[in-house]
Length: 116
Image (cartoon, rainbow, N blue to C red):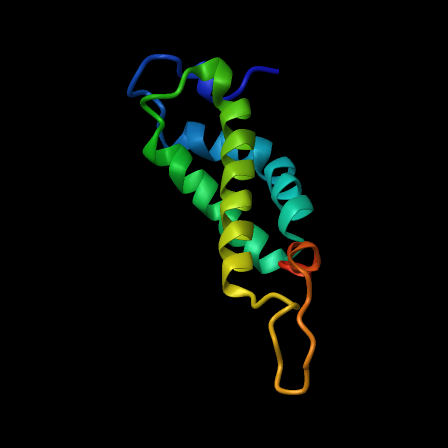
């Protein structure tokens, strides 16, 4: 099945109608791809929105045959970026607490860091 973008192959003819058709064709699959990584509905919805905003912003640079692949690569990259940022904000389990008197080894620190 040809994508809506393929129906408008000339540069600059990627219009709102074509965008809507692409969105309806791919949004469920792209959302699933994102959700598999982030495991949070609200976050997955936000990233999905970011992906399609990026599609609109890059519409004149994309090759028609590569739109689907671009969507999935972009959704993966944005999901991984989110995960890296959320891990940086999440304190690691090895951090010393007031009751803890033992230190964990560097090996255990890396194993526990970023787990939820």
